[in-house]
Length: 235
Image 1 (spheres, rainbow, N blue to C red):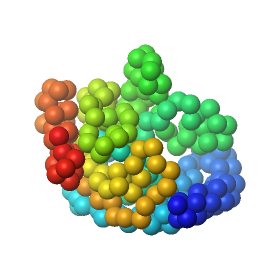
Image 2: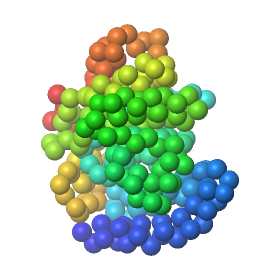
Image 3: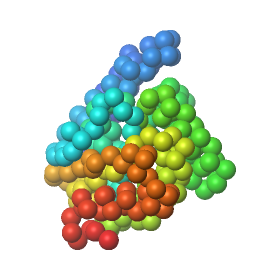
């Protein structure tokens, strides 16, 4: 609990100060690289303060010149700050549209090419896929939690179809990513973070030529993510 409070205090103090430096620059120039780097530094430092150590596997499988769609499992609130900082290039992600309503944060997210979505609105979901397609075509990676919601028990939920429509539209390689251990350090419904080790596995990219049908691609991604989970969480 103490580590969690210190982490939140760090974010509450450091990030507004950092935003005062980087946000005006991003607004004036349209260049979000400084804002992105500071955000990623804050995410990594906060996770480290909480006592979470990360073991990375498979980054050597990725081509620095390619643009990827990363598809990940999701069990914890700590997944996002933990994962984004471990992807060595700029990445966007799809976020709940409510977050974009906050004046400063929402503007920063728009500048960063993040994509809002209303999960309860089918038309909004289609619009989000179109917006995400344009982001990927700009050469920005996309990170998506394919279950749409966090799992309570660490086992994967059914996948949403939207990410696979996106892959078809973009024709960008898909990288399945397994996050293992965040169910222990911060399970859904828990506020405090336990110190521990989290494993992040970047599986072999699936090129568009190997997608097959949308259902086949979904099955390939699920099998890859599932293979990296501890045996008790596989399904």
